[in-house]
Length: 382
Image (cartoon, rainbow, N blue to C red; front, side, top):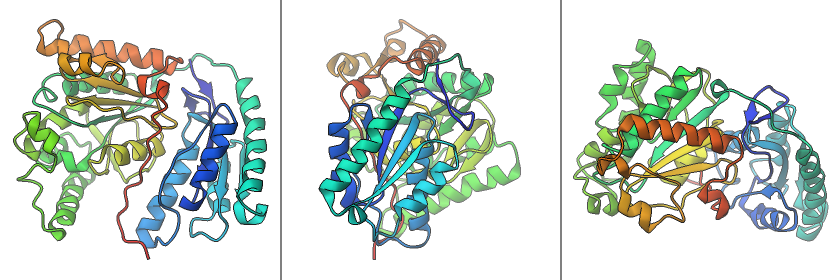
């Protein structure tokens, strides 16, 4: 049961997003969310002194967050003199037919006036959004994001393969499943390239892995033979390559139809690889900006991670961490390790949970207001 948007897409939430285009406006945006029920926002450090492809990627992320189907309307809040102009961001979002308002702190005469103007605009949108009714929608209209963070020795044999089953089910239903974390696919790229639908996709699989490794080498690190996360090591993973073999299991067995840039909306249905870093929040933000309405997040160490606009279903890889962090984790795939369920059974259970969450059931991260946001920066500021 979802919300039909003017451009035909389907949202599983009905948020009003207060979108700050510059770090200077994030606190004012936060104040608006405190005043107006039904609004969400995020804190970030971007919006100015960025150039080239780094500028373009941040701009694409802002626009993508506003275009996400889970967002009913957007109040774009800028300072006025920043590189990422609020009117430019708003103009791109408005093409979808959503209600969009632009507020400038400088044009408004300061922070307090901007908060007042933004709050009025947001309150009007919230009331309009509250009148919209959910309607029957289809799994073919869903884009799910998949990621793993704080992995352990169980990740590759319990939760990740179960998410792979779900990925295949979504693809079979006509929907889209996004596989992210390029860093954590190093060593498994050949397996994904073999499943590519054409030579161009297969070639790019190797290219983006090579680019990710070269970025690390420029910083004096060979990440293919190492493991940068102490938590992963303590969880029982010996190398990044071992982690990658488990992480790639989230992709299931479907053909790889497309590889897209960070925060880019897929143009193809089916299994899509988004080029993101391994950083949990940055990859989550990229998938949300790319249009994912729901994200499946597996963890063997435990994490509270969430998103301001996308429900994140947390899945534990082992039963002890599920019991220990039950206030953060929604589902337990440790039953596979315990011998109580098969991978297919847990996958089907996760698929049913997606249906419930997409119809309005809140995730643990939503209940705790875990509104995490981070953009992958690929260049220095100037």
